[in-house]
Length: 338
Image (cartoon, rainbow, N blue to C red; front, side, top):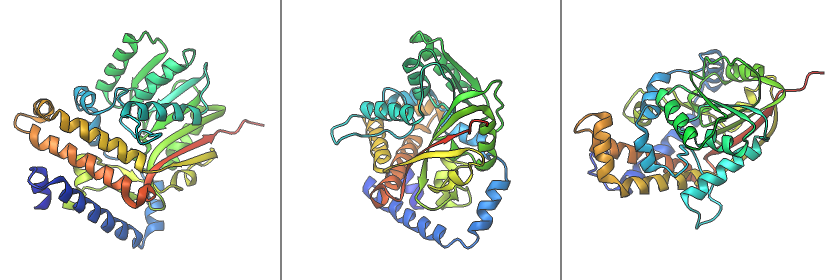
């Protein structure tokens, strides 16, 4: 009942946020009391690489690019920014995080780079511009994203970009890579052990994998569509998971962890709040656009759902001062053969 009222815009944002924080606390207690954690984690490692890919794709990545052009920053980075100081802008936060990603991935000009899950091309196009002698191959399971990114690349005169429409959970490249980079794609996967074993084989000896994910400091859990409390999974994150900070290193297999970084969750919260501000500034235009996307008469409720999504994620990453849920960066290396 409360969710329906919130979706209808009948509850003030402050009350919606209060309810979100309460649900977050309940989820924490629920996961901390899970008695079969070892069995749960083993089941993930033995199951499929991903589930619910089609649903997740429809929820986010086949939504018209015009929507994201209205609510994201100028680089269309649909993931956390990094805010250097209180006066930073969304554009600056996007730019700083893009540069940080390349630095931590140890990218160099002339490399063959594979990006897994490229979104609307923020990192793909950034890498192509910064490293003009590198070949950037990006994979996305969204045909609309492929067309969008290639169009942007052509506008900028970038001829070192290739975008492949493929399911990352079953993709098999035709060549080895110096670097594999992934930003907020691994959360849509389940069996990271199998996935990382495949990536190991895709890398050249001495090649490296850089991963940017959101995570919880010590809990791994799934987003399931089993009841009213699973609103997030139903509308925005079907098949997704929340990995613990140490989850991916435990799944790395023959890849050697070189370094990891924790990026305080408040950086993501501030990014989401900036998206919410932009959505509110363009409410009338977005309602009309969402009528086109979701069906006539559906624009108002879907704009409110997107607002609730931004608020829910912002509250999650602000929880506990940004130290409960946050962004993690990892760099793994494939050993050079003796």
